[in-house]
Image (cartoon, rainbow, N blue to C red; front, side, top):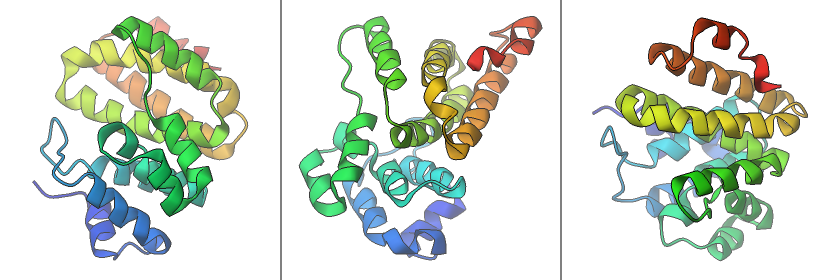
Length: 205
């Protein structure tokens, strides 16, 4: 399976937008070595690179772009927050900490904890979370419609919880619009919402 062009460019350092953070790109490739995406079999690092590319394209800060590249390393690899801080600074490590899922309990309890968490999250963490949500939702809606029926309402709840923070930035507002479009397109495709509910879908603000 061919890798996305921006992933190939990141690996070969041919992506000029990532030139200044090649160390973070290499760190992400190394941390996720051997891991693959569940539905496509692509190297797992395709996901954080796509998230980082999205944050960069929307005008995110350098710390946000690095955190996007590293957002799963603590959750999914042996890398620690101390290592992230030592290599990329405390600000990036703080963002990665926000982006690391630490919820406990059954799925309902974990989702409730995450809704509360993201209602309180700082703007920079919300920026990365939106891009992460967009990429994951696209993948799940395409490859696992059955699970999407569980997953998408959970992400809708998180998006609504983040709304007061989202309006504070053009970057997050733009990513939020895309996130809602991805979610609602998937809901339409799976007939999760009736047309009137979708029309009123501006419950988001």
